[in-house]
Length: 135
Image 1 (cartoon, one colour):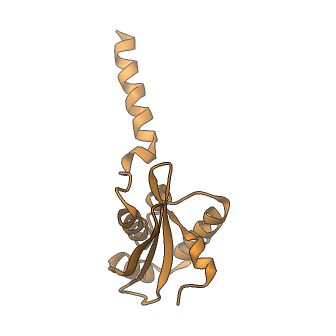
Image 2: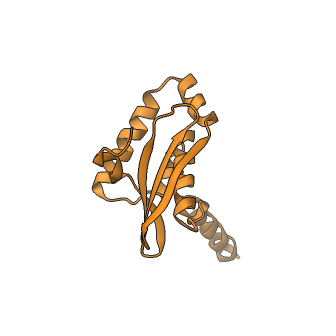
């Protein structure tokens, strides 16, 4: 009897603790970019990290983004949460890299990220920002 209760409880606990399962894999580059940007604007860095290509440079840049967001006033954070994503130019560079240029309705700064397909998954690569192609 105890095993019949413990096994489902253990499975539920495992599923609840595995946060990656609560987010849906991006269907395409545009989906991955949009999900990442929306989560970032909302300050939901757990969700944003699900859509991030996690190499050392991206981890470093992502940590800085999170730190900068956390330092903002509550009013600024709310303005980002209320902001709309303004896609400006989304186009494939090849079959596994898409350039995604956007701004948001709060801060009109233009940012370009790349969305890359790695092992069949679309993930955001922030390194394009370092190339100085944002305004």
